[in-house]
Length: 334
Image (cartoon, rainbow, N blue to C red; front, side):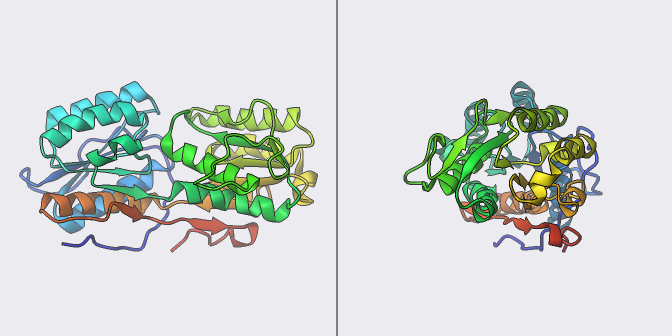
């Protein structure tokens, strides 16, 4: 049995309430697959839910989409415990704390429950617990974020990298991709920190961790731009600050002349609807977006395949989109 392939689509968010069973009209005996996100309350999660439910409808199963109301390691662990107690036919998860999550997935594996990860993978030592990782090539995601910066600032300069929660494997890989691209490193020879490496230096107090807090991320960006008036590049591995568009505009418009002249280059992860007007208005140079709808869809499809005794590829790439200001009206739309 092969996994169904569908064109991905990006869906602008809105808040999603803590999810119970998806609204399908299936018999109670239908197979149920849990899709566990880091938080249900962000713009990234809504299209995951849409993809999960679409796959469930197509395959005649149930999507049990669930996660904490905010990014919290302990809360996600409780969600996993609840899912295991409830009983499901398969589990797909984006791990907030990969090591802690793995310990619970050992129980699921022992019970013969198929497991896949999406977006946030397990540590390499625990990769045998899941049959597939579904999502973006996160290292390459970081590479793409840095490419535009290198193009516009070939002589290097000072840079600040913004990321989310410390220890998030997917985000750490993006940061590594950025450092290696700016500094001339590689996966085989990774760069720990940019210290006049290939002309690039990370400013003090960076990288900055926003703990997936939107308001904090916008304030952090404002503070970095204020404290470093000659900063050459700001690279965010996710869209947090841009999800607070008014605060983001206020921060960047103060230095708009530097942005317009490419003295300050801004490259941001994600390409959701709230971000694209900022890109169109020249408040960033580049956006690298993911395909969360496909993460949700392919997670359920993979679990169904595994449940039926089939096999899936160990890595299912959901791809990403690359957006410039000239493409802001159409980027990510299919």
